[in-house]
Image 1 (spheres, one colour):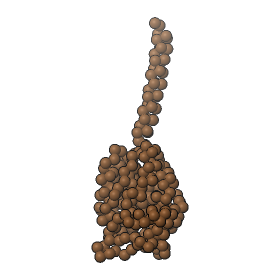
Image 2 (cartoon, one colour):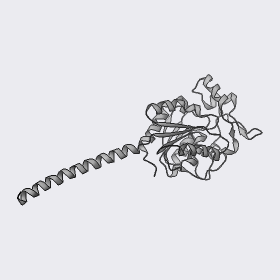
Image 3 (cartoon, helix red, strand yellow):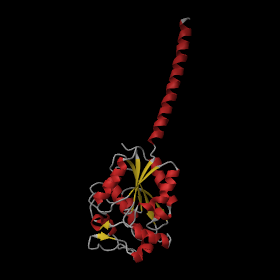
Image 4 (cartoon, one colour):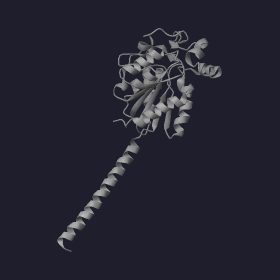
Length: 266
């Protein structure tokens, strides 16, 4: 084989090798991108409710292939609820979207610094900063007449008032659903509501939010102010404070957007 023919063959081999290398690199990059997609979701309920309210969201997300975990908050203190949420996060097999409703927003703000959290979703939720509590924001405007958050009892426990539960918490659900939710609400320690946060995960993690426009428990104006302050990407959904129950498709859509947008937590 003469020198020129050899050089030509060598160039062909190198070209083919280079093309194969580029193809393999592209494929590996694509597979890595696929593996980095967030498929875990942890849902954190608020006060005056329990984890069963997430059933509609659970069904939508699991049908789409998400691994969903629902935290049952003890509601005995901020620290206890954060600990319960961190246990759920510890059990995840990769990056996770952490979702909180109402009081649960304070919980995910504190717990969301966990390394597996890739993004946060606030559903009609409190979003305090460091040295703020949910009460900081709750008391920033007069409560609406329908609001039924009661005073602490002799044990320091706060319940939502029975005669205001439907109108104040979940007016867009049936009375039967409201009655069940009232009966199953957790015993919420009033001291938790005024406990200042020591972490604010939304400062370092991408965040999404939902303002419930018919919310009578947390004023929609307060929700919007919190989300605007933190540069949270939020939408407005026509729904009561229990918007995660009455509008599961709209809420699930935001969670899915967060999962598809957030990259693996570093």
